[in-house]
Image (cartoon, rainbow, N blue to C red):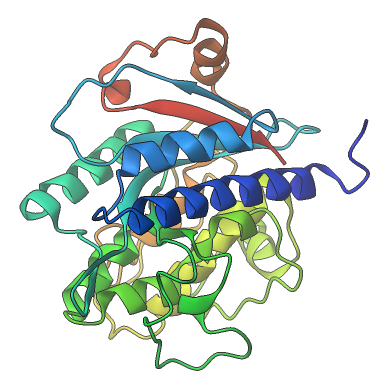
Length: 317
């Protein structure tokens, strides 16, 4: 039966199933006296639960010692074939005694640097999928920021949330004891990525490309909405930073199929990458051929940029 609510709502329903499956797994795991759960297992359960609305293919792991899976997610407009890609790595919200922590600095920061290098090779933005446990697990985690409704840490949708990697690195340098709270406050629940009714925007910087300005200031849907979601998170925090670059140089993207080819600010603030090019390079005019090939053959594409991938996921929104 055709989904009369539209593809974005269908994908959202699938992502809700995925988050619910992860919540149930973490609740069961902890109730049996175990410590923090396996990120790879949570990812497997998430992907199984979102099928068949989201298609995925899992690859053989190349680095058994690596902690956290790298998954390439593509959100695709079924009508235009426009697509937005993002490289995802899982991170657990951990509690040890009374301390909460998310280890972005794993292996002395080498894992984070490796993730960003991989995203540069693939020419997509990098994000963390935060596995935060069920609401009971987070009931003692309090946020001191203002909230119009449910506190971010107690949001029932926050069990699987998304945070741009460059922002996670920035927050890691600012917060010691409250990094977990700061991360959850900045993150977006995974199931909210494809639906956003009001789509507010308060970007204070200069955007020379009228098409980019239109993306930011008018309602979007599908892949462009996911890209706008991530940019909104980054520009909100960039507005709070002191100016880190004296001038803003604007450049294009070295991609034949990029939706936006010019007018992107190279200002990076205190981020590890300029945030506009970092995010918008993931927005393509069509889904790359290697994604179709991987879904059909169930094999890892050829090339060094794919060697660290554990799999790909495609969502038509």
